[in-house]
Structure formats: structure tokens, C-alpha cells
Length: 158
Image 1 (cartoon, rainbow, N blue to C red):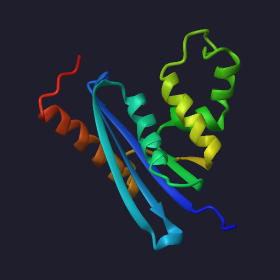
Image 2: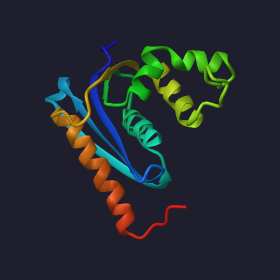
Image 3: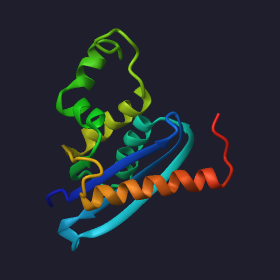
């Protein structure tokens, strides 16, 4: 049996106004395959920045063809801390309610991320946003470009 492949995922989201037109971007790098690289992006007309942060990670994880060792680099403390500080486990125990007894936002996306976390061995790493981390900057460019392209096409935000 071969070891699972290692994949570094960088992901980011952008939304303006928030809520409003949003975009996400992701860069996947496979160091064991000559640093093979793949860039992904997409956009939605009526969304939030947090949803786009989650979508960047989800779409990159969906692109993986088999269980992998994954390092997700994100500038979203919301995304990273949900796993690293076990917020997700607490939300599930509380019936998808926050500590303040409010419904957890983006539950649909969190549930998909939980499934990916079960399939892959994921390490969540925080990187500072807009601080010169090349791949994070590239994800931001992809997310903003996708958002602007959707807006340019005249898709209405509701």
C-alpha cells in the first residue's frame, strides 16, 4: 500500500459588499509530484466573506482524487479555529448552536468540511492575510477576479 499523497492547499475568500458578490480562490500544490500546481476559483452573487472562505477550502478538497495528507493554509481564523479549537465538536454537541445559543451560520458548509476532514488527514494552518505570503496573495487575486467577473456579467445580488 502506498502512502497517501501530500497536498498543500492555500485558500481564500473575498466579498464586497459583505454580504454581496463573493469569490473564492484556491491553489493546490503537490510537493511529491514536482510541485504540481492547480488553481481554482469561483463566485456567488449573494453571499458572505465567511462562506467564501469555507468554499475555497471545500472546492480544493473536492478536487482531490483520493485520501491525502493535506495542509490547508488559510488566513481565516474562523475556518482554522473551528477545527483546531474544536468549535465544530462543541457546535455539534449543542445541536448546531453557538455558545451564545444562536444557530451556527454556514452549517451546510461545515458539514461538508467535516466529511472531508474524515476522508483526509488535514492540518489547518493560519497564515496572515495580505502579508506577502505568495500563495495566499494568489488566492486572494483569484477570489477577487472571480467576484469581479461575476459582477461584470451582470448577475444580480439579491
